[in-house]
Length: 95
Image (cartoon, rainbow, N blue to C red; front, side):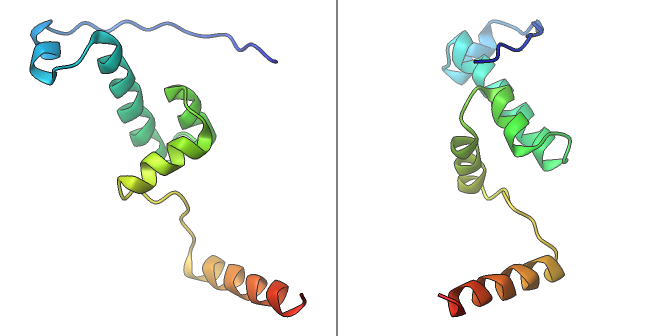
């Protein structure tokens, strides 16, 4: 198993934010990571795998989260989609 170097970042926020959110500090930090990873993914600044790594969850679990929040996990142009459909049809017809 490869251990990657980690960077620690600190943020300050009013303590009553946790009360308003009804969250623990740990839940709040996880939410911040999740929202940041989601936004970085949407802006194409992080790949699906890197965004999932930021949050600390498996790639498929992060993809499922995105999907449940109506965030496209796979964006294809019309041409790419047509190529994928043609390729799938070809594979099915040869079986």
